[in-house]
Length: 113
Ligand SMILES: [Zn+2]
View (cartoon, rainbow, N blue to C red):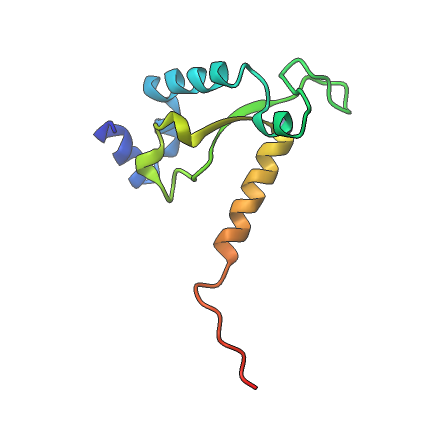
């Protein structure tokens, strides 16, 4: 992985990472690989693309998500296998799931009887 980009992530300058041409290129590849359809909706037998009209009568926002979050897995930031193309709803759910993982205690005390 490109050292300059890795340093952006490690130093918390994620915006610089997301503005890099390497990321933009990979992002396009991930979108193309997903056939421009939300990959989570697809698993549920639903087709959602940016042309899908949402309940507010607007086009659906779509984005490329890192399955393993960039901050914790910086070396996977440019792995296409770590990317998925998601609609905003699925993206929020995916992020929420990640929050829950973070909140999990490091260890659980054994119950005492
Ligand atoms: Zn979706």
